[in-house]
Image 1 (cartoon, rainbow, N blue to C red):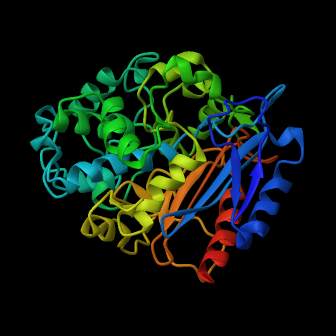
Image 2: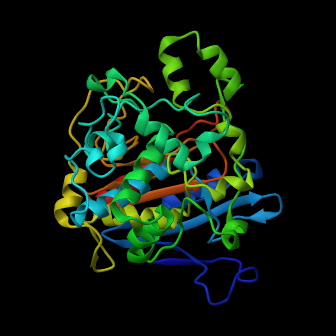
Length: 399
């Protein structure tokens, strides 16, 4: 194991500030460091666990003007948070508080309106609740208020296309999962996350509402998300002419992207898009899912639940919102891996490039967090995480 000392002059001496690079993962580390050689590339962190053991934990680049990326730097990671929120639900299901095949309305009675009384928890996690629409659903910036969104979604009729295929709940997934968890436990979602993830994993950095004393650690995102060279609202206006793209636009509230670096966004609980994480925390969570539910010698999830999550059945139907077939299953999607011989792992990717993945066949997990969104063509996404993943999987398969 190689330990690379970080700059000890700018961190608390009581904190372990050494990077970790197991010797066989040196080629992956070198690839990562090359990505962030330019200041224009921003910064990021990459972490890998195998069989529950941390084998790579590195960071590089800048978190902002004059700010190097540190061990404790974190960034908002857009849809990466969906996988984190789903893991909370699995912890509750593990203890019998939630049954995947019972109606959501059994836990949230107001949900049983407008033809939704039979929609199950499993269907909600699989993006088959038909509640993808978020644009214009509530006035102005009302989509930022959890109670407003939850009540409105509970009263909304489901899209009938849900019976034919999945329909990605781009933003609405957050309030749906949050309200379900809060109804089951009777406590707030940030407290649930701390109890179900932070404490058992001994990693605090799973934030959907960031305490003010930790906000200095957040690396602002850049550039602004653009699609086809256009700012999103211009793209949305033009996309309205096309039936397929119009559905995707409908899933994203007007003005959401202007909140990307607004300080107030961290006062809110929006697991569909505003989660703030370190790569280390994400990789450790997925390490438990990749290791039969066990991490640090403790049972984070029962083997039965971990196995059920990993048994992602095939699905060839195109998602009616994103017009692709990522295949969502229990809050995750099929892993993005450029290695064609790899097993179908699972996890969740976020707009801009961040994400976390698990590969139970080799007990491997990987997570990448960055403040630089996308590439020269688009800020929506790029191939950094799939490239890192394919290298990590190839190395891990030889172990």
